[in-house]
Amino acid sequence: MGVTVLTVPRRENLAPPDLERVYIEHADFMWACLARLGVRDADIEDVLHEVFLAVHRRLSSFTGEVSLRGWLFAFCRRAAANYRRLARLHVEKTGAAPSDFDVASDVDGPERAASVNETLDALERILATMPDDKRIVFVMFEIELMSAEEIAAVLEIPVGTVYSRMHWARREFQRAARRLHLLTSEI
Image (cartoon, rainbow, N blue to C red; front, side, top):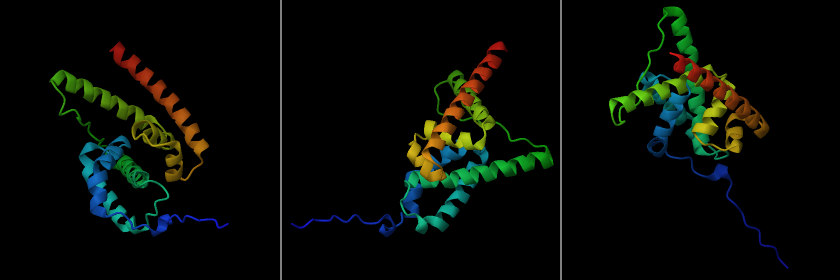
């Protein structure tokens, strides 16, 4: 009695994705990731360009061990961390703090646009207060809707660590949101 063995092609044998296709399918996702990870709206295009240069250099090494989206998020995470580090140095040297940005340009009515911008600004301020390790997991899980397993693979940490960071990130987010609500309701 013979046993039939099905062979599954190894992920390394798959052709790497085409850069143009990656750009078409994932540029909006990467733009949003950079914004949520602390890159100012005015600088996102430049940082995204840097990310795609890095992706272009490393695209042939993509093995499919993690999803392409997760792999791209890792590039965005590193670029945003570098950006924030350099932005802090810029503020220290020149005293020039980054300006606020308005996101709600496509919203019906000026009142609604102002409300959406206030909410997004509050979200950015809360995320900016979180430690990077928790912020990254929070953004990946709650905003980008990545699974804990995918986050663990991208960040190269145990799944239990993802859940632990997520637990603490949610607590910090809720605490900051409550504090912010109290501050804005008292004004």
